[in-house]
Length: 264
Ligand SMILES: Nc1ncnc2c1ncn2[C@@H]1O[C@H](COP(=O)(O)OP(=O)(O)OP(=O)(O)O)[C@@H](O)[C@H]1O
Picture 1 (cartoon, rainbow, N blue to C red):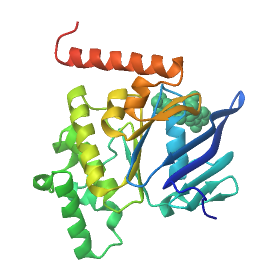
Picture 2 (cartoon, protein in one colour):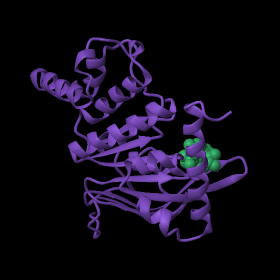
Picture 3 (tube, rainbow, N blue to C red):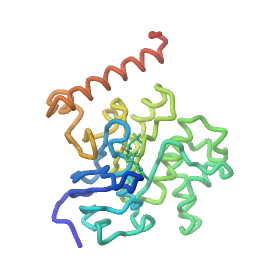
């Protein structure tokens, strides 16, 4: 089954629910989302609005109640049909790095390439180390790196197997404010170099604005506005988006001032 839509990643009328002691709880409700090839989309919203659930559905970890997920025209998920996560060619990067502590940096990056020819694998590892600027640290172990460096290794490891799509779930939230912002811009540059399509999930507006081409402000399992940073700032579709953007901007300014030692 193929999509009639031309978007590279195409989520149509997605609904997801969890069984809870109180009964079935719908957490994503008829959500539509389209991302073009090579673009970085972002889901931005308060805790519990359903961002991670959408990512997990794209990765193939959550069954759909309703709707379709297409990638490059291929149906990945519907209530009747699902491609297993390992066959989706979807790379993932999460906030806790999840590096293997007993493996060197180069072995961590090569982990998903075990079936590759030895020579090609080594070449790919070196390319990835260069891409994220860690050529000199190949033989080190994760605990010998800073948080920002570990997160760059996690990015290199996610990119190494040449995924068709990259999912980033709050990838910077364990880092201090300065590292977080620097890394956000770096990650954008790296993704632009590779031309990869990506979806970022965050509740941090500065991060979303630094990385994404288009941002979806979420509320109660739906995208309220899908727009550029400029559009969200200057043409919010309703009071909810206007308040959310204003409040987040204020929090971000205060966090930066605090990090600079200017606020008590
Ligand atoms: N396995 C589960 N079983 C039951 N409810 C769940 C489960 N996973 C998530 N939920 C609920 O679904 C809702 C959406 O969760 P989700 O993790 O997608 O939100 P989120 O926007 O990513 O939040 P956060 O920013 O805090 O990670 C929340 O109310 C959460 O409590």
